[in-house]
Length: 293
Ligand code: GLU
Image (cartoon, rainbow, N blue to C red; front, top):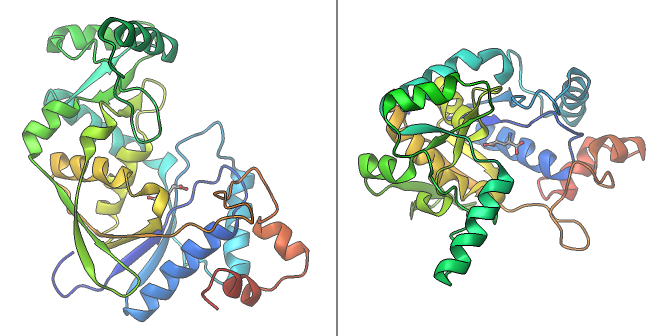
């Protein structure tokens, strides 16, 4: 953030299902902090998954936010309209030898991991979501061999060469603030993720890549989002550093849980805003339910 410039926050949902109480909390908190700090708050539509994000769901999401009183004024950046911005960053990372095309399917990775675990008697590393790290079979291909792989008629994913990236960036941290406003420097642990996917042949971006590009392009100074994304922030710091983008300040807020203590999901509708609204609840009731009323 430029010194002296006003804070800028964002709410960045994916229109792949209805918004629930957890989204309401995040949107209202972003709106409230922007107002308290004399800053602004914007809506970004994270719709890179064209199979699951639909115009109807996007319209419903905007209607829910409007009803809640948490809809910022337009324009709204729709990620699906900016694929060229993301593709340019992917190309730069491939050119710099920091990302590579990978072709093993999930099943092939599982088979490789099972073989290695039997051979070594050691557990294969897994990422914070529990998925095995990619074995990096194509990591050592020459630039020409990588290009040839990408020209073949088969699916591939572009992955970050995490070891090469971390050699370039060195150790990283991020600034995490809490509800009281105090800030703490957290050590990033991107190595826990292994060679993350940055793009696929048919979708030239990923959540990680597009979120860092957009936060920078939109001048976001404070990223306020759910605690389930705090580990992703380590990957975001690597990408920001490699791409020469500024690092926002972060606040990962607690998640709203259901009565059984589970994370809310777009597929269970007991806490869907549309359902609560249909049952006669008001926006003020929702704000009270999430502790912001
Ligand atoms: N689009 C992401 C989601 O709906 C949130 C991204 C973010 O806030 O960084 O979970």
